[in-house]
View 1 (cartoon, rainbow, N blue to C red):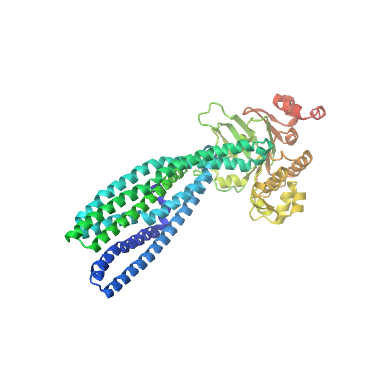
View 2 (cartoon, rainbow, N blue to C red):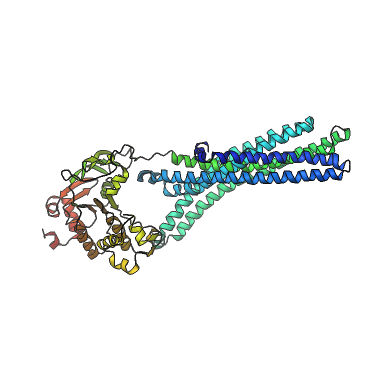
Length: 580
């Protein structure tokens, strides 16, 4: 929790005033037993109604002042805790957004969602209760003991005897529950992951009739979470009865010995009532403190998990970047050049996903990339916008290492349309404008037309509402809108990573024809499993097990590259193979 205290910096005043007003309220509360003792010993003993009314008015005044102080304290505590939660949530979200694909895969999306929701809510509640009760409860306990000393020293020894015993009970229970609450949060991660997988993959689950299997998996995980929560609940449930028993025993002793001292004349009846009231205040304060400790325990467990995420440093940064804008491209150098590039997904991996990749691409060229499943096609193009960093070698953009560019400058000029189309909740216009926020309707329609999406968008309209992840569109429609979103940005380098796989052959051919109308020297990379999709490219890169098996035009590769020849034989007719 202390590591997260930095998010309270902007709320220092509220964080100070909250506890101050809470202790002010506690001070008024500590005066109540003294006033009650005066009413009994003076007003009732002397049958002085005027005195009783005056002191009764004082009690009402103390109550009102305490109420005002309490409400003020809660206001400041709420302001500080809500601000803390907002700052923490924003900072954690920004930190997660800086993660590369590697860190996202390692931590897991479900775990990150739990950190951003449940864990932050727990820490926010913890901060709120700390500001309200953390100082108040000890202040009440110590204040009650001090006030009791002013009444009778011998009876106050009962307070001093039972207070450390209660504190020990609280400490033991707290030490037992902290590890359990950590386990509970981990189980919630698992629940989030399963829920996310099921909701996003519901069509696949139904296609394979796996509903019962998934229900059982969810139920088993939920039962495991329930058992951990019940265990933590049982241990935490001991707090209230344990403290009540100890404090009530102390109260019985005070009344017993108070009666003896009253009989001897060493203490008045009003003072005995005051001592019992102070013991009751200690009871309520310790119960509140016990509940506070449970909340702090949960908040501490969540804070540890949040700090674990903050401790993960992004493996990709642009801190050393020196180029934040590309004003013009040099026609004398390749727009993209791979120099002996190697990549491994794991630092200790002996086998590279890509090995010794070298090629050059000039401005305006169209490059086809083909290979079998797992050949490294997506890995190859994901290195270009620095979704991952090369393990060895270097990639040059316009003659400079891509690490010299800021992420914004690099990805502004390199647009990737991924294999899995991703659209966001909003209108078609809103989604297309992701490529260019100030795009006019004319530019949007031009991009839609080039992406072969004109007919269905014309029917639906630019203001058609897309549901989450584009669930109300077909796979082909989502792919074409994703391509249109990239085209409207007019990137210098366009990468289509098997992004037309859901299109029929005629639509795919029309799309490739539109892309060849390269009116601003766009360099295009087409990754595909279809030979027809890349056969007209300026040159084709053939990958096999992470290495280049051949580079050249379609006709050249048919003669010189056995891997490419096998791919074409499996897809093209004999007549098509003999065309060239």
